[in-house]
Length: 481
Image: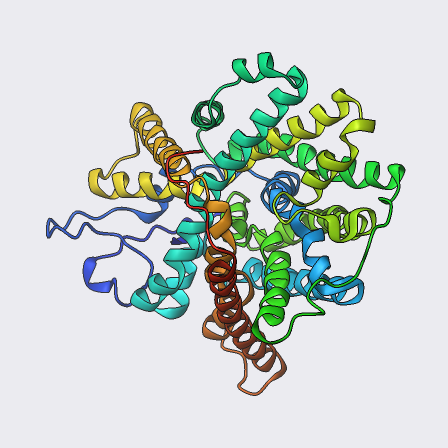
């Protein structure tokens, strides 16, 4: 929400009347029931979990950024190289990395466009940039999918990885299989652990959880590519581009799907403003300075994880990389026999911890929205039991969706393509709308070009994802995880 905040000793309190809502898009100060009851916006911000504590620092921002940006999607990066080849794979990955880093810079500077006004939520910045109706229309789906949808995927991935860890530790055989839980029970176990951790009150309070998730994510990524190097390439490995023999739409669709895999691997833009919202800000030291330091350090580490993972994965396994599971599936398939049970179990355990930690930060915008609805209706902060109940409700809903549509991962390229403008296009148009650079100037031209390219690419990714689903089909195993 776009909130007025105090700058040093100038304590500014704003109460917005309903008649001024149109003049201040994205700010809701009064109940819409005609009661005339208004809410002090600074006080409201202090009630909500994203902005309840602004005592974060550069280190805590780094932890959140690393935890949210390195995810299981990165394991599929070598799959993209099978369609693009060495040169184009590295080029596309480098372009995507620099592009999304630039749009992060835009968001960091748009968080506090003028001293005293902070936008700590992506949806509120979208409303401020594009207006009430268009802002909600453009941002509400990406924000909802990247929060709730990501949590569902994390339950599916984390629960499935728990099952794989059990099989690794237990060993193969009918006796081990008979003791295993069902897919639904593994999902439930993951969700219960995640919801216990989710009782931490606000975004700043989960900094240590994000640190644990960041260490785990760096750990499993580094272990996989380091072990792949130490064990060498597979025999008769091939680097031939798989779609060279294809012409027309099939070949073009494979290329677009490969680029889409790279695009989806760079995640977390929907949390940039929220993470920055945990940092203190003053006229002498605005939050963008601390945030950008955190971004630069964390994204250097992210590049050191993702690029080796993609390049080494393709080098070690070539076209034998499975489309589902990526480099982890390849490592488990081809290197399990000469890798100790402890090492295999540690990789899977780190992935589980990473998923549990990521669930907390991706669920936080949903927790914030639920508490925002309660606070605006009741004009008071959520009591502890209400906060716990809302989070249990969200966790139960994501668990139900994970059990109902366990094939959501197959739809992720389509749904992720529809959310791609949030990363590659919307920040560019927001900069033009809010900062109003000189028309035909360098910043105006650059952002307009990148924003338009981002929209076009998103449309192409959607078409390619639909074509891929139509061509290969979809195994829709409803309620059978």
